[in-house]
Image (cartoon, rainbow, N blue to C red; front, side, top):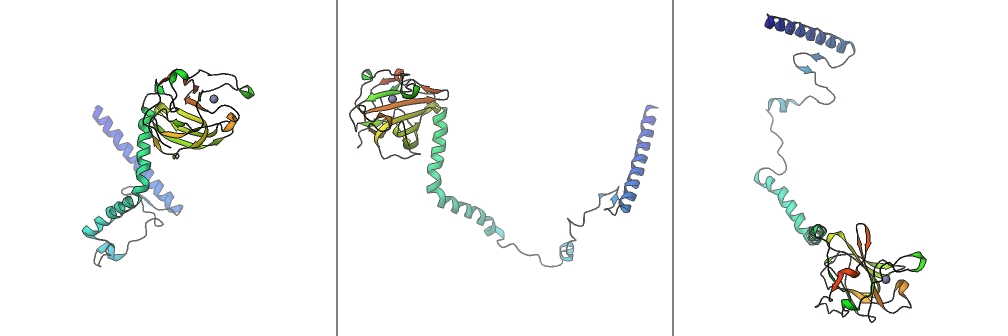
Length: 251
Ligand SMILES: [Zn+2]
């Protein structure tokens, strides 16, 4: 009984669908639209599917051959790609290496101890001047490492040189991106070592030389060293516990 009812409903639904299809079909003719055939779905739109030529329909005419056919054709694409890669490799390789190194560097923990970044200066000779008053209401956001003019300034960390340039306060400066996304700032340099932005440096790589550029003019030569973490500047003094990295004699 229940089955019969369900079956009757099915028939009634089918009839309704058919009546609807007929109505749509008539409406389509009246509106000069592609006809709807309830057995086949919508008629093809002549504007998007032009009639295929007889040769394609019946396959009785010779087919046009592609320019590179067969095994040769299958080799051309990869060969061209390989040639482009080979030609671009000298340009691409350092960029790839740097990107991989930068990702690894960022994932490393920030250092908990660093060498003094000026050759020949012992950690015990340093003075903590963090947040000391400076001109214009500024606070000192780093440490000043006093040393004779021209003394090599050494990278405290490994990293990637991100900038070699100048600014009004720092004078000649070098920025190095170190482990744990920290930025290391070396300022008042007398001059730069043979480094460029993008160079990968090791702890102890010479970045430049102690000087008095920027707002250090007229003061005893010193390196201003700053460390910037995600939340802003941090005090380098408690970190500078290690002697300057040896093996960085370069000038
Ligand atoms: Zn300073």
